[in-house]
Image 1: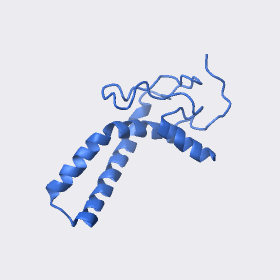
Image 2: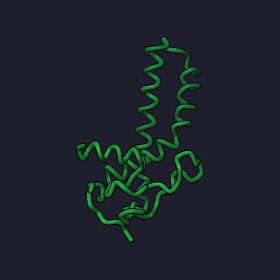
Image 3: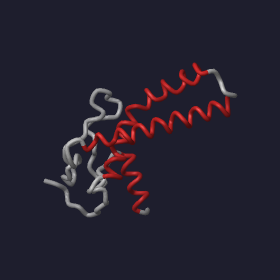
Length: 131
């Protein structure tokens, strides 16, 4: 398994970008009121997840881009496969889809922020467990 494949699977599993073992989030994705809570430090290696104050605000840009991508892909799919339905049909499909995907998009955008734009994003195998 290449390091990129390992990083992708670790990111999708919500694991620490440095050790790929500790969980990033405190709660399950479907715990809607607490799903975005991130551990201060990795429970396994101890790396601090929020590098600076407001670090995760940058995840809003990733979230916005993901939501636009979902909307555009869904819109084009409806246009080509269902013959350009009325505007209200687009809205009745895309808006609930975005609402349903919000917990996933929120978590995934934070993970993208950590794996792409952080100083600790490089995988370091063999990191000892943090006491």
